[in-house]
Image (cartoon, rainbow, N blue to C red; front, side, top):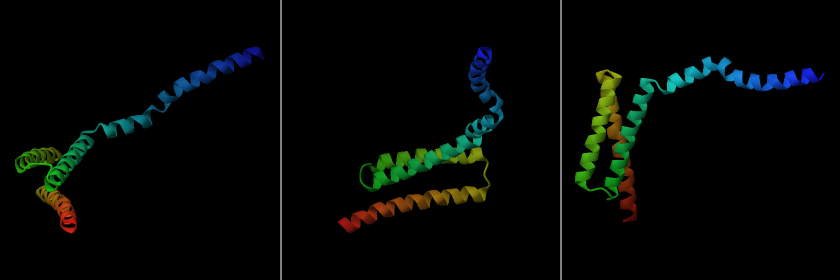
Length: 120
């Protein structure tokens, strides 16, 4: 009986250690997806859009000078263009994404300027 308990106590940690290696196939899919070039491009695209939105907001509320605003916007637009080229999008999709950028910028500007007009 004592030998049985000793073997059981030795098997439990062994199973816990070996289990992740047996389930390795499923976790590799998740890691491949997160580190894929398309996921990286998507994160860069979102960062560029967020930067443009942030610059629009800061400029609209007066925290950013016109010169700095134009420089930031140009930098983020370049990044967005690089990402679009890397994604190898068709012209229609590029145009739709550029329109999306303009719409988001206009939305932020209207929200901030609309708030200033109602409070001022």
